[in-house]
Amino acid sequence: MIAVIRPHRLQGSVDVPASKSYAHRMLIAAALSDRPTDIACNALNADISATIDCLRALGAHIDLSDGSIRVGPVAKGRVEDAYLDCNESGSTLRFMLPVAAALGRPCRFDGRGRLPERPNDVLTDAMQDHGMELDRSLLPIAMRGKLRGGRYALRGDVSSQYITGLLFALPLCAEDSAIELTTPLESSAYVDMTTDTLDAFGIRVSGTEGGWRIPGLQRYMSPGSIAVEGDWSSAAFWLAANALGHRIDVRGLNADSRQGDRAISRLLRHLGGTIDLRETPDLAPILAVAASLHGGTTRFTGGARLRLKESDRLKATADLIAALGGRCDEGPDGLTVYGVEQLKGGAVQGQNDHRIVMAAAIAATRAAGEVVITDAQAVSKSYPGFFDDYRRLGGDIRVEQDR
Image: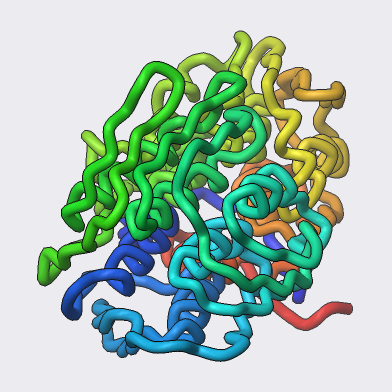
């Protein structure tokens, strides 16, 4: 699908969807709990649906209703050769691999898009050292065995998703465990969200200098009901639009959230300087768009991991800006964006990357002519209602089949 956008002022109010990051975590914790849990969640997307499907494949009973998800615990007993389709969700894959292993469920994992190309060896190697048999580290993966606790030495600068997956799994093991980081942790807020969720479900995890200690033989205890707060990652597009001169009241956010992307408001004030992306990599495309229309030069550093997202997100962001007449230099782990007064119309390759598509849609509001964005359907990964909200705010947009 393509989105065809003509520049127009955005104004009004928008209710942001539920946090994808918290929804993943609450669903998994609920499925591991002692009794059913009702999760208030105002929106689903493709990634959350992938986690739901994988939990169902492991025997969880999950019922969906308007604004709510009821999660019944994973059924006791053996499930032979469960098939877990992670779609394009890296979080689903890297969280569910150790969880399924701790349950002792033989599984086959698969996915699509760029997910089969994204590396998992740091996690799969650690799992193989602790009782698991995996036929490979890239999708598709066949796995059997039962995960053992113990000492896990992991790099902290590859993916915090590996750490989250183990933090969910290791409390179920018979042995006590320790996760020890061999390099400094990046995207630490995502691990904070994990420990926050574990605490809500009665799981004890203690931070140490350079890692965590996790007692074994713990039981997940359902809080009965819990709510997923609004998503700062989705809100970032509207907040950046405000920085470009639009007037949008962004509702449903927790000002005290542990979501790392809450930093968007602060980072927008640093345009024209240097912005380190190590803690907030998902903000790179929309921050770069905002920087392209800001006076001066903005340097983005610490973004090497962006090359392994749904697209090579550094290159895709640089290409987006260039396609609309902006100036951007791509480096090995970052971008240098030179502010211009106005962008021009043009065609942006969405790269099947939801964050590139949404960033391009915000850029289009400040272009001199029509902007055509390919792969518009990619927004379903995190924010299926994005274009509906865009239109309600006054955006001049039509979405159509590829020309």
